[in-house]
Image 1 (cartoon, rainbow, N blue to C red):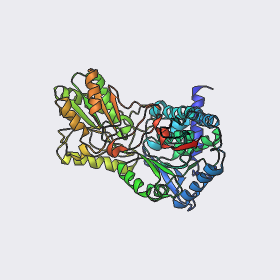
Image 2 (image 1 turned 135 degrees about the vertical axis):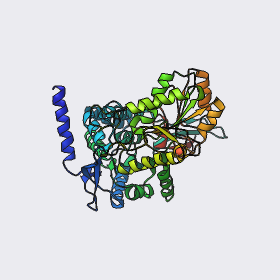
Image 3 (image 1 turned 90 degrees about the horizontal axis):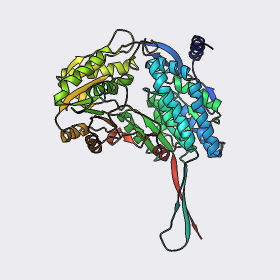
Image 4 (image 1 turned 45 degrees about the vertical axis):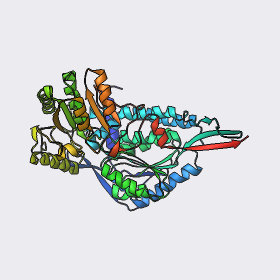
Length: 497
């Protein structure tokens, strides 16, 4: 089939998916919300409604948790061999690749990101999560322990699935965040209730259809769209949920922790950031300019690890700032489905108002926007890529997470000074360093209080690399072998010989 014919088939498939209200997945069945309510899902490029989606609340969460508990306690998932479970998890990744174009179009329409970015980043990274953790299913190991006390004993540990997991994901990378959560939980043998963000539920619901095709048993994964204050709160507080995994803002993360205290469920959090990106005078300046631009403008700045605080050594400050500003002004804004688009809209009217208010606050406090600083156009939720200079450490734009295409630039003089400035934040998710001096890069990396430090690169992700934050950027790590620990319990067995 020629490329044009394939594209037409994909577009027709997406149109069919959007042609009727989408239901939620509970216990292997696609069902309406118990209340009968729906959520309007908008195209952020136009502000128009794409489709209505079932609006889950506490009653739907109750149904989903019961299904997950039943599947965990008496269903086939827990009794499968690790090899059987791994093959199913791997198959999910294959199916994502087989439907990559449908996922890309849905992600672009729903989230606003450029179609080409979804195709080369979001979708392949998501499928790779399932392949990576499909392999991990057979490698979750315990240990034998030499007994050091008196007597003869045989002691060993087992790693067993935590149980029923509540997973709450954000709207900035809808499919990828679902993959980050689902793949390791399934590999470990857990059962899941997944709540996608109300703004961007479409690729999660499409994924639900593929989970069934892959052979995931009924009740093992339940997908309940809904608002955070209703469905999300009910999931976090539910007494029969053994663990909640959340990605989102630090403010909501605190609410998750409070809700989890009822049954002292385990909690993992991947939260906000205000990440420093540090450019030394000895860096490859052109690479650093492009890297600093990508660090803040990728995904419209809607990244928890965005390099939103740009620190530049004084001798090259003007050159780097001018270069980043030139890059910003050349970015083509438009609808994600437009082939010429380099940056799409923000995800919602609420997010547009948030970013706009921060830009206004920066100007009011004396910062200078050398480019951008305002809404773009009068249709959709577009905001211009923005570079602020003349910033001070106590400004809101320097202290608080904006979650938009807004970077603040400030000069520095030496390594110790910049380490202190970079760490002067309640966050600690990520950081970037640009230098040709490898020793300097490693020395500074050790000083930075951040879960990921990129040197001469930024936004590099792989399923094998743990990701998470220090301080108020979260608890625990996603990806890599470390995430398996979040979805397993350690059991010690001791036998007297």
